[in-house]
Length: 203
Image 1 (spheres, one colour):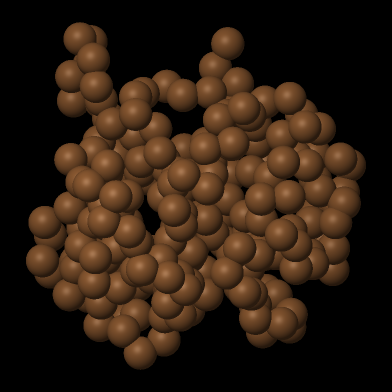
Image 2: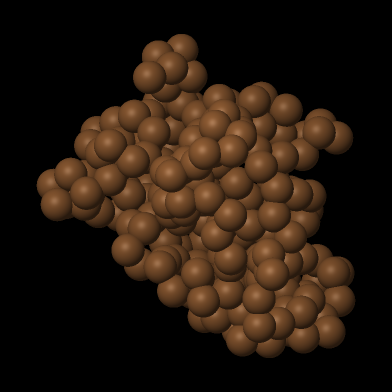
């Protein structure tokens, strides 16, 4: 566990995060040897909820299994661990059964649902700490510029919601921030997935 990163994450979030629920012992036991120790610690001590000034929601992976209808897995296991305020997915990739490129895996990936792209963003807490330190800089791990432009103009998100383009970009919508509305995150992802067939297609 990266204690320096953990301390920075906790200090940054302890007075502002919104806890929605605790994580059951069954879920913790199921994922304890699969997901990063940092995330398990947060689950145990802080729970599921809204973090990083509203930008990150830590979610129950079981609730987002449906996304793999639309997202091909490169590595196994691949588990959704969070969503951003823009409806993009943060997933953890393991490296079970890898015989080639043994160092590949055990990393975070961002599934950009808006643009139907994906990119590796490396570790969990380290990535978020760097991102928050450079939130307004050009180096943008999470393609968050639209969020920065509208976060003070639209109402605060509730857990399970995101700011989504209406209509979605995959349905011909415009990238204008004027088209960003508060939507149900699962419905938004489903709508885009059904429209494009595959959000991430590795075939």
